[in-house]
Length: 186
Image 1 (cartoon, rainbow, N blue to C red):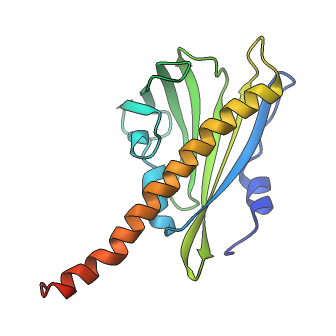
Image 2 (cartoon, helix red, strand yellow):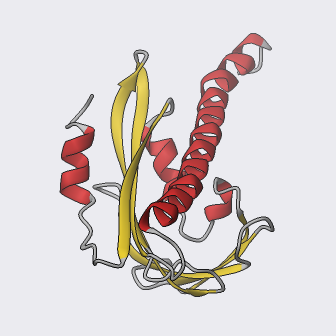
């Protein structure tokens, strides 16, 4: 592992002030793709649908800087159709991305998330550890456990999809030059 442990990164970058009526959690995903490739997907505030399977459309308003707002359309099957989200942090040097939900027709009130991306070696190849944490209000009628379980399930799905997309792209990058050489085209 390069640069620290999961616990170090969580302690350093994933601190949330959690009120009594909120829940919070951190999830970790190890991806067999190099950090620049994974980060290129994560950092695109205007294109979450590139790896988030529940996003059907995204319209970002502004210049993709801190404070930019995006309107996200959610695919059917979730208890929502839209989400309005604000870019809180985008640090290309430290690979930190943070979003806050500021509106929408869902029950995720005061939701804020942080994603950090860290280089690591997996099976002797460049890999990436992605950590996503969140804090959110517990909706009336739900428990903290129910709320955390629901949000964690969504994040796990997004992280699995991020891994699938990244790993597929990484394989393409590794094999395309060989195909060109093998076919005699240079």
